Length: 398
Figure 1: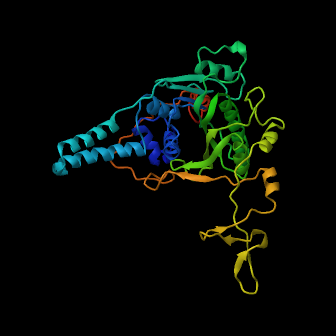
Figure 2: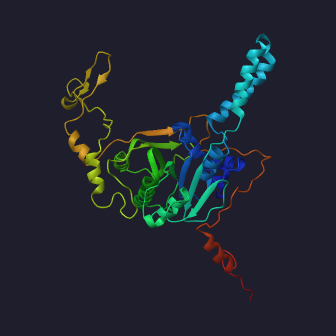
Figure 3: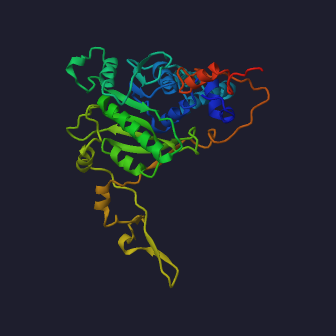
């Protein structure tokens, strides 16, 4: 987490330090989980591009320690309030009814850590250790990473078999990785898409059928093509924007649910998906959902009224719902793979606005970051500046 003036006014930046998170990005994963229930039934997770470790920290506290955040934590607070009101206004209830209510509320506040949890975090940069997290320093684009990951997931894995499929697959793969942006949006989007495909290739080697995949993307004009490609491997794909992600940023997240690859497909980093014509062939054999189409209307120049065009002639069914037939060029659109990706904003207006600046109280105490950067990309620049005697070099007196 930086220390710029914008960061100091950012509510999520301050909340992250107050609540003990390593970075404000922890709130993004929490809001995605609140919307899609990502952690439901999950015990085995792989966190890609994990440094500085805020997403792994969320996994550790939710899965290993059994803590609650977001809506479930708010429900616990409401339960405590109900217990207080019960003590004041509960004279009309019988002793048995009071005991049942109290027992239910006590069960809500008990931490419920999950059994047999295994979380593996991978990043090129070093990451400070976290409780219950296996950390690997490796490149997710390199084939040699797969044996390391499979060995971390299953200590009995034998690299001599040269298998690139997990014997004990995972329930969830998440990736919050992004390249160092250049400001050239087309270039940044391209590099980010390549990082996403690397994460997807690795995820398909370890995901179990029905598993989930969440990754950061940069929204661009080809997001519909990306959506169509992900639909080959997952039953449901949504582009989501957490409220803690600044609206001024092109950042978003693809949430892919129910992993169901084409029949006979085997993932491998030595022969990654998307190389050659494999992706095109799979897109023809895997059926996909019908896209969402907008009605095409025409205006009568004489009367000025609007009506549906002949190709999109609409009619109302018996329930009074206006139905629109698909256009005649649907087959060509399906071949081209151009589909409208559903977009969902996560979080309601009760949360903080990531783009807003909130006034700081006068008695506010400045907190240091929970985990300072271990190996920031600007570390070498700071060392060179220090060796030169400061920002303007060494000052010599005449």
